[in-house]
Length: 238
Picture 1 (cartoon, rainbow, N blue to C red):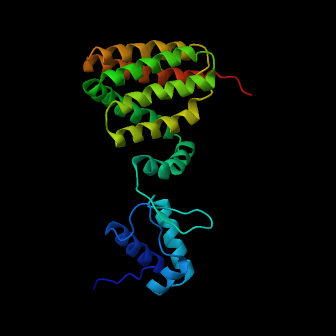
Picture 2: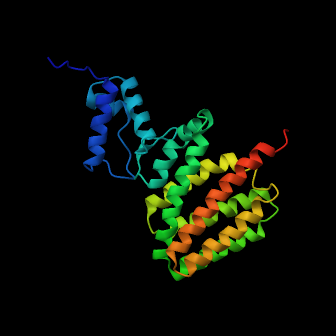
Picture 3: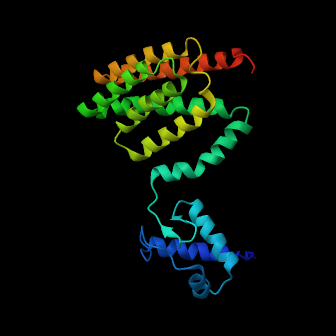
C-alpha cells in the first residue's frame, strides 16, 4: 500500500501561487493580492500565507517590501546566484575543502570560458578588455582597487561570452572567492603575477587564438592558486 503523505498548508498555497505566476495570472511587475485576500481565496490562516510568501521570495519570484503587497519579479541569473550566496559562503567557511573545491571549479569553468570569449570576441569587447588590463595596472599598490580591477577583468571575459547565465555564474564565483583572497592580493609578488598573466590572456584573446587563451587562463589560475596558498600560510598573524 502506498502511504498518503499529508502536506503542510503552506506547501499547497505555494504550489498554487507558483502555478498562478507560471500561468500568467500575475505577471512580472504586478502585485499579488493582500494576505487577507489570499487567506479568503485559499481558505487558510495567515501563517500558511506568510510561510508560502517567504518561500516565494527565497526562490526569487517575488519581492516583499515593508508596508507594500508582494510584487512578482522576473527571475534573472543574477537573482538566482544571489539566492545561494549565503549558503555557499557558509559551505566554504565550514568545509575544510570548500575553498579548494571552489578554486578547482573556477579553473574548469574559466578555462572553457576563455575559449568561448575568444571565439565570440567583438571589437568593442576587446576594447573593454584592454581597458580592464590598464585598470589593473593603474590599481597596483591599492589592495581594494586591485581586487575590484582583477574581478572586472574576469567579469569582462565572461561578458564576452554573450551568455547571461555564464556571466552570472562567473560573477558569483568571483564574489565568493574574493571574500577569501582580499587580504592576499597586496602581498609581495601577487600583483606582479596577476598583471603579467592578465596581459598574456588579453593578447591571446585579441589574437583570436583559443588554444593560447585557454592555456594562459589555466596557467594564470593554477599558479595564482598556488601563490595564494603559500601567501596565506606565510602572512603574519595580526
